[in-house]
Length: 210
Figure 1 (spheres, rainbow, N blue to C red):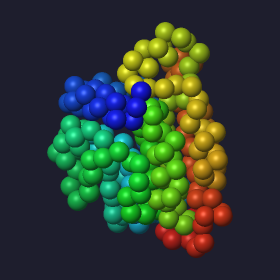
Figure 2 (cartoon, one colour; figure 1 turned 120 degrees about the horizontal axis):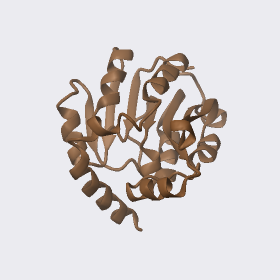
Figure 3 (cartoon, rainbow, N blue to C red; figure 1 turned 45 degrees about the vertical axis):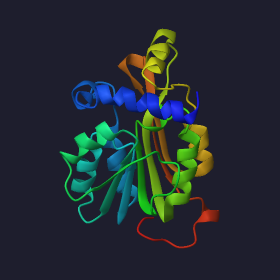
Figure 4 (tube, rainbow, N blue to C red; figure 1 turned 90 degrees about the horizontal axis):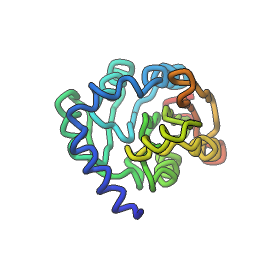
């Protein structure tokens, strides 16, 4: 599958799901508040980016937690961006793939996004490493893995890859500060939370977060 094909497939998928996303995903997307709490323990950001911001749920939470920060949301889906515009005020929204830097940030959040970027997840991690300001952090919450074949197949049909593939690459791209795996529904699947800092070789001075 080419990147173009993947982008088209995701846009078609969310054209159907954008209006019902918040009502149907709450029982799957665990750890979203926990990752924001962990981010706040490691950072008081001035500029925040959420990649794959979807309907804007996390953007609203970010604005409440970091009321003085400048916040940007980026998403490939025009339909998801349209829903987000209806619930966010004073937040910049950008419709495009995250395959090039968006301006330099103290906190970059991926919330159940990277596992859906197939292909493209490695490029987004590379972009975040370049887009993160010195002293900044990346915060990731996402599906990790499952041992149940029918569930993995069903999730793949919904554009989600669950092969524990994200965490080794995140550890390489960033300096790990906090990492945990948690079971969902008695171990039907696991999800992960990761906080990482800019690699020391890439950081020259603290700016906004420590």
